[in-house]
Image 1 (cartoon, rainbow, N blue to C red):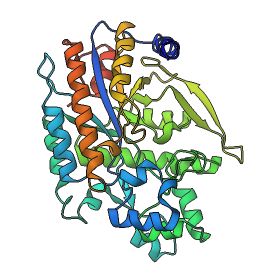
Image 2 (image 1 turned 60 degrees about the horizontal axis):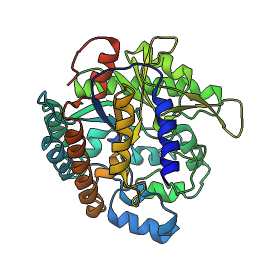
Image 3 (image 1 turned 90 degrees about the horizontal axis):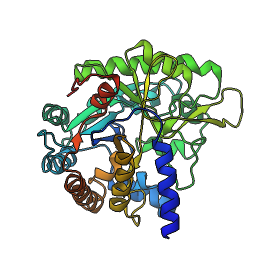
Image 4 (image 1 turned 180 degrees about the horizontal axis):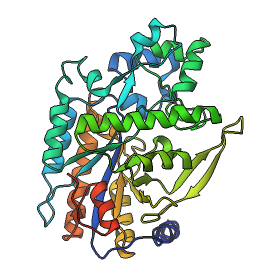
Length: 382
């Protein structure tokens, strides 16, 4: 076991060596999928279990749902309980999906056209979410919850509409529940309807580019500022996407270690992998911000994320890199499973306390602030 840890630590050290370095101990928490629908309710989940069987459903379907007031309140309480030496609390960079499908309008035209509603309009359909945007603004004001752009929708619109028009199951059944995803433990990215930038034909590119432009417009109108960074769903995007983002003011690209570049010529939609590291620039001057630790207890409930994140933190700080911690929304949602939320928030609080104890000089920042530091200025985006 010690040899295994040693080998893993060596690999992590090598992965973190290239790029921008700092003597400071900096931590950013990035969290995807805010604003996007998933499983509407526990009742719908029970229907899905009867329809497909519980064991095959992914952790997302078993736990994730559109956030509520209580979800944000509970998360904010944890973040506000920790402070760095500069008086800053840990901040969640909430990578946000701006719209959800308008199921009624899509059904009314026999699935021939795509219509959407703003995620804030999706909120208004439920009393527990009606004025939820005010809670977002409270989190922004306190610099503990900072939105960035995750796409207009978390959905491959072209592929989804084609499946509905063909009468394919399970898409038609899911549509009745107000859903578009039925991921299982074995669903590949190639097969996922969640991967909005996974183009399969060159003719799809204009639609994808327009969705990005439209989504960035909506982001600016809702939050009152531009998104400085972007994270592609499932880490799938092409160079054309980067060009479009650049032309509309996005200069930081959040990423995993590997970008998955879709092929528009292969019928199997295979991906080419491209390695990235924090501080790396592309030909446009955009900077990559790579996640080097993960807090995903909902995905792996038997894994010791507390110890793993601390070990990775020691590695990245030793080589002079910031800790960029990935923690998807599903870990903090309680409307379907309250146990999921309570256990994970407790674990998060312990982890943040551990980090503050081991590195008293830790600095908590959002991902746009980190991008600014890499660019050579100390502008705080909050």
